[in-house]
Image 1 (tube, helix red, strand yellow):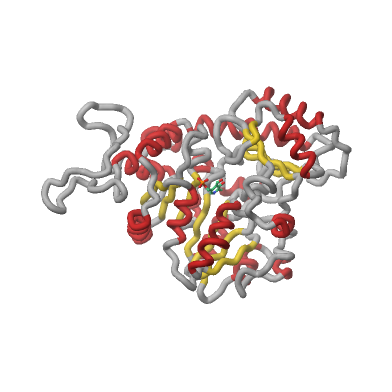
Image 2 (cartoon, rainbow, N blue to C red):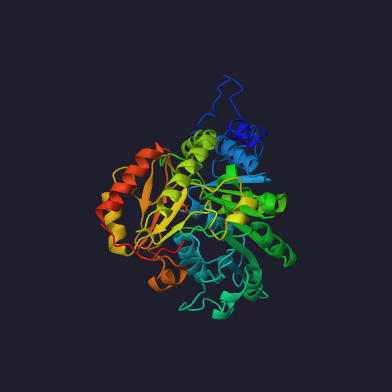
Amino acid sequence: MRIKTKLIHGGRNATYFGDETTGAVNVPVFLSSTFKQDGPGKHRGFEYSRTANPTRAALEALIADLEEGHRGFAFASGMAAMTTVMMLFEKGDHIIVGDDVYGGTYRLMTRVLSGFGLEVTFVDVSTGQVQHGLEGEQPLTEGAPSDDMREMDPLATLAAALQPNTRAVMIETPTNPLLRIVDIAAVASFCRQHGLLLIVDNTFMTPYWQRPLELGADIVIHSATKYLSGHSDIVAGLVVVRDEALAERLHFLQNATGGILAPHDAYLLIRGIRTLSLRMEAHEHNAATIAHFLTEREDIRRVYYPGLATHPGHAVMRKQSRGFGGIVSFEVESGEQAGQIARAMKLFTLAESLGAVESLISIPARMTHASIPEERRKTLGITDGLIRLSVGIEDVDDLLSDLAQALETTRTRSSTIER
Ligand SMILES: Cc1ncc(COP(=O)(O)O)c(C=O)c1O
């Protein structure tokens, strides 16, 4: 089956798929916390919904199919998914994490899991740009990279961050909000060589465009709240693992810690996934059009979109992903201007989150990435004037008009353009 067909028909090898009795074409919502046993300890695949629920099982089989993985797991949020994956590790283990990850991931690693003895080093493993080091950053562990590392290529940076207790590398690509690109296959081969797990947050691309497990990753994580659901109506997380050993451990942890997705949300997520191909194509068309429009303007300092040929990660992106996605970030002169633009928008709603049918605008420094200390934000390049657009699937001409009128209201001075 090709991916567009799989979005509709995937997951059919689930323990439960379809309704044998009525022939319903949709997976029913099984609102049952417990299931009748035929004898003590003799159940029909379901005993208690934290352990397994038929609606959730259908979703988990679907996402495993889409990511070409061994088994999928559904959680109550992307962060619940991430937290459960991190429970694979133990006190004293060390994880290397990309330095431009979602602010909530940074918060989880530095303010929650560090308290349980997990060591973390953040490094820039993106390709084609070495200007973002960790200048001004307090080293989080002894292995935190020095300023010299900024001159290194991503694999040398990883090698320098390696410690005897390193167990895994975790990356996002494209990163959020600067859309930097990590070469998944190159990092995967580094991980294999050093016996590390590679965990990839595939939220921005979805399996429709990019499948990290095929490129050598071991675990894929999604905030399914975003494109997979696509309608801003649920919060959900998904994990897919490469093999049975990881599947067994993940299922043990899912059941033991309990951050599962509820059946009704699992149903809505299956419904969202069915139209993923149509939505992703439309998001990308609109995002590319807007990115080109922004590069033409004198009052925009920088445009970040991996589909632009001038983007430093463009070649790697073409190699590992079938598309470039629907997120465009750009930089104006100041936080004040960014605020004015956001307030003047009529179709782009000022809101956190991304990946749904409606267009959203956010100012990462004050919203999604506010939990990252200011100094660190500056070092990463998340300036106060950085704006992130989650481009929806409206008519692109209406989106362009809205953007143009909002930019006009700020009457920006023309400034040096760096693209
Ligand atoms: C890339 C990425 N990963 C993970 C998360 C966390 O997911 P959730 O909000 O579903 O907990 C987000 C949320 O914005 C995200 O953008």
